[in-house]
Image (cartoon, rainbow, N blue to C red; front, side, top):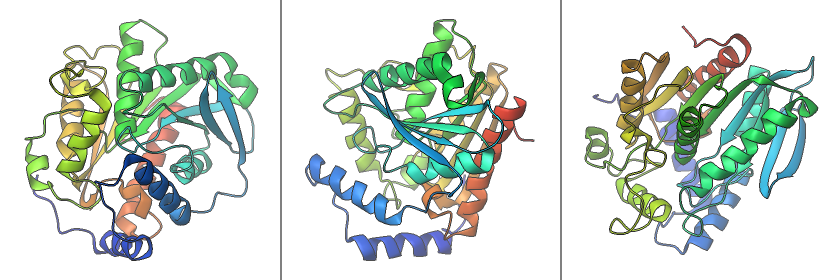
Length: 317
C-alpha cells in the first residue's frame, strides 16, 4: 500500500510532544524507559469524561481499572489489553483510551495491567488476560456488565495479547466472545514485509524498536518461543471459533501488514471481519485524536466498532 503524505496535524502533535518531553532513546535502561513513558503519558492524557465512575481493583494479582458510564445496567463489557511493546505500559498509560471508549460506546471498560517482559515472557500476558476475562464473566453483573456481551480489545502489543487470548479461548471451546477489536496490532515476527521496509524508521515505532520488544517478549531467537501462534497469531493455521473482528492499521506503521494478514486469515476462514486502514497516520494514532482530525476519525471508527459489537453483535457496515 502506498501511503498518503503523513497527516500534518499528527506530525505537529508528535513534534510538540518531542519538544515537551525531549528525545526518546530506546537504548535507555528499561526501568528508565518505563518511568519516562509513564510520565509522558500522564502529561498528555486527556481529561476523563466527568460522568464516568472509575474504580481500581486487584483480580488475582492483576491490576484492573474499571470505567462505568451511568445509565441502565447491565451494559456490554470491553476488556482491553494495553500496548507498550510488552515491556512497558499500564492502566496509567491507557487510562484516557479506555475512559473515552467507555463513555462514547456506552460500555463498561475493564483495562488491565498484565505482567511485563522481559521479567515475564509469553504466555504470562495471556494468562493475566484470561484471569481478568474469567473474572468479568463470573462477577461482571456486580460491576454492571452483561457477561454474554463481552468484547476483547488491545492496541499494539496488547493487540497480540487480545488475539492470542481469543485463539486460546477458541482452542478450549470456551464461550465465544461478542467481538474482537485490534488497534495497530503486532501479530507477527516477520520483519521483512513491505510495511516494515517502508516504515523501518517511522515515527512512533521503528523496526529496530520492534525487534527489541519481540526479543524481550519471546526470548532470544535461539532459545525463545518464536513459533507459538498464541504469541504470534499470524502463525495460526486454524482461526475457527474467533468472534467477529474489527482491525485498524496505519499506513505509516511497520505493523500495517500484520493487521492486513490477520484480516485475510479471518476472511478466508469465513469469520466476519472488517479492516480499516488509516493511510496518513502512524502507530498509536489514537493518542493524537484531540489534535488531528484524521486521528479522531480513526478513533471514532474504533468506538463505533466497540459500540456495535457490544450492543448489537454486529460489525460496522
